[in-house]
Image (cartoon, rainbow, N blue to C red):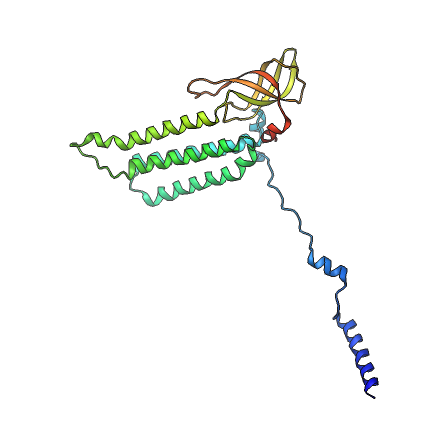
Length: 262
C-alpha cells in the first residue's frame, strides 16, 4: 500500500512540475543565464557638428581641429575670467571662483577624453599644455588677488614680487614645454604630386606649432598620393604666427598619423 502511495505521489509531483514549470533547468539554458550577451559600448562619434562642418571643410580640417578649437576657446575664457576677476571685479568671489573652477574642470575633462582620442600620438604634449594653461590662470589669481604681501608706499618694492613671480612662472612654463615637446618636423598626408613638389594635408600639431591645412612643398623623396610623410618645419623664435612647413623629408609609418584620422 505504501509503495502504491509513493508511486501516486511521484506521478502527481512530476505532472505538477511540468505544468508549473518547476524543476531542473536544462544545461543549455543555464549556460545562457550565466553568460548573457553584453553589447559592446558604443564609441563616441568623431564628427564635427553639422552646423560647423562646412566651416572646417573649407579650411581642410576635421574633428581633431574642432576639439582643439574648443580647448583654445575654453582656455581663452579662463584667462579672460581671471583678468576680469583680478582687475575689474575682485569683490565678486561667489561668481568668479565657481566660474574659474568650472572652466578648469571642463579643460581637464577635454584633456582626458576628446584630446586624448584626437591626438593620440602626441597626447602627453596636449595634456601638459592644458595643465600649464590652467596652472598659469590660477597662479595669477593667487599671486595678484590672494597675495599675503600688502601694498604700502614704505615697502613698494615688495608689491612687485607677486606679479613678477607670476610672469617668471609663465616664462619658465612655456620654455620648459618648448624644450620638452618642441620639434622641427611634423607629419602629413600626400594629397597630390606635382613633379618634385607635392600638396600635403597637415593636421594641427602643437609640438611643431604648425597650423592645419594644405601645403605645397618640395619633396626630397619619391612619394605617391595617400602616403603619409614626414616634413621639415621652420620655427620662428617666438612662434606667435606658427611654424612654416618646408619640405618632405621622407615617408612615415601609417601608425604615426592615427591622430589625424577624421
